[in-house]
Image (cartoon, rainbow, N blue to C red; front, side, top):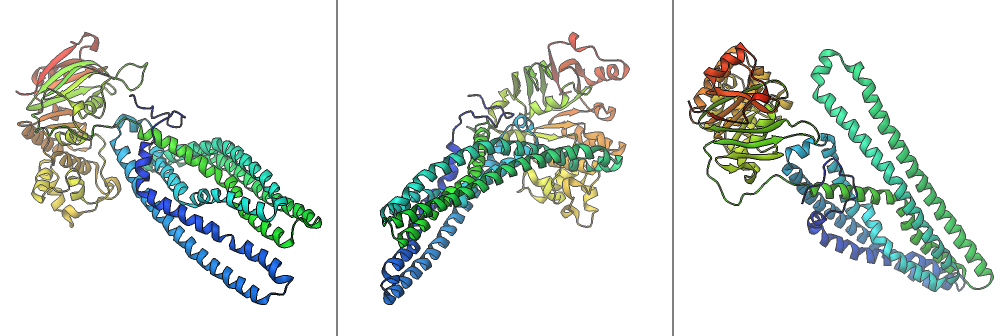
Length: 592
């Protein structure tokens, strides 16, 4: 079954709720207990109306002081137990919220972590962050005040029945008013749905813009772009505020309407009851008691008008989470454990495009890379070099054709297997806040100090690190902000080398390195190429001269390829042949 389009997660397509059933499993017992306790809470709510009724019936006119004291003791005991039971229900719902939070948060994190890279790239980062707010909405609906409201609503039928017994003329007012509350709640939900959806989308756009601003803060400061980008920020912020005002205005309108309906219902009950008393069909005590019970009935329905937005938001959140949990995942499990591959790569008529209707980035490319050795990949911007590396890692799935590792289709391997077998150093290295040791060992937290030092030495960063006061315990700041670009690059190389992968991919890694560092990196790669398969995307002659073979890409096809000593003069002495004249397949044996 094809996965839903990640760009259309707000649709009404029916999806499975199996994930929700799994999430709610730990909380089911607590919800049942809370519902059972609500029964006693609502039964104890009868204590005060019964006390009033009995006082007017048995005490006021007969001067029954002893009866009053007995009733007073009984109602005080009922109120005490009511307080205790309400506290117990609150704690039950807190435990339910905690269990849902833990279960849903873990499930959502695992799901997002398992999604393919192309799916994650299909939405801004702000969208994926808002899914956790959706999770909070689901948690609050099932365990907060809305959950209490759901447990209280069924008991309204009991109160209506009691009112029918003690004050039959008044009950008809409630039977007319309650459907009105339900209709107003439904209308408010429908009107709030679009307003809430628009506010959410505007908030996502604003948050995405803010994230982009923070990521590019150095460029913004350096070029003094604050005034230039301020209008765009203000437009997005103003749009969010405007939509929030629309949503807030509708919320207030329906909340006020609910309050007005509540007061009208009370007035109607008292008026009807007064007429019944005049006709000797009702007593004053029965009218007061029925009015109190009527407020108890109307209260949850009035809350329903105000809380219907929460139910609507929860319904929308569930639909978005349904769509996310229905998305296809990367392979996370393996049927059999494979031995460490030798590093034999092959592309069989591989094509890949980012969007339908546009030329493919990789166009029917076939090639073979035999271990060990080093292959250099060159080509103009946008010719498919980085995409090629991501397909080797299994991050992008070919539109057609296959990528093979030691003769096996890489689609059969788990994400963890490929991460251990294919090391990758991107052009823009991302480091995590923490120490140098933590960043090198993040792919294998159990790595020994000797393994970490060996990887750092191969990457040429060990001598720099041991010269620091805190050595490998040096804090590097957010995204490595306390390090230079070259230092971050070398730490990323050490991180990639730590698992000792048979294949190592490097994407323009020399951009932040000086000439001396480039030579050191070339020597390191030359040594590794004796028993590893290395694919390096670069235009630096220093690294290209260390390659066994070189492949030039143009428009997703091989423009030329072969031994480095043959290709280098053509690269720096003349332009490559056009892609249209390139062969459909090329075999690049990286062994010298």
